[in-house]
Length: 323
Figure (cartoon, rainbow, N blue to C red):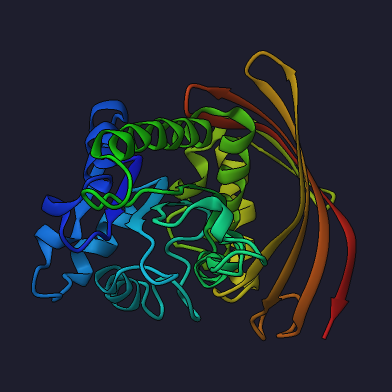
């Protein structure tokens, strides 16, 4: 499994003075990284959708690396976005496959920072320019991580900048990007928040295999689910079987608030407010009614390296609306 997948959208890396340097630095610094150079893979623009989607599924962090062309991404990367982020994969009724993953935009900008200002010749700030990409990340359910970008990255011999200057800036850019990736992968709060989003994204689907959840539960986990007590993996399976008989797949678990507190080394208290919007089966105890339920959850968990185990799981109703 690749923890990091980098999608390189430069249309001609062999001629690149900066993006090529950034990718080389990433390859030497980041472990478990899959760098997908679209210009080499798809010079004919015929994207292998299955291969690209499988690469994304294997990642915790997805980096879009590209030069900022005409206030957007190069055509090759736009084609990749159009083809790969498809209905029922990245959005739509069953389009939850990227939900909870972290996405970092990493791009090189030719113009100076002063030009991206209401008084500059580009008039708008970079944050405004990338709003469509930011919304794309939001729509797919990924986490929008603060982007990494660098200005003045164009080299025109005898006209604009020196080659050594832009390549030096590219190495600094790569270092910043690697630090950002490391923060996402190693910061315990970020890890736990990402895990929580993944946890609830799988509950939206209600998969038949409960091992997707029990792998993150300690053997003797104590659970209080709205006043009902359960113990260990068998207890979870009993509760989960009831949940699958009650709620139709395609639920929405919306995390409205999350707070992570370290109790002591490796032990954390996680407080969440989660809204469940779901349809129920007609033969369930809820009789086919639609549910809008707000709950408070408290988890006690351990985090060792990248391994998370929930040891205590409490759910208390905060409010609901039956439709």
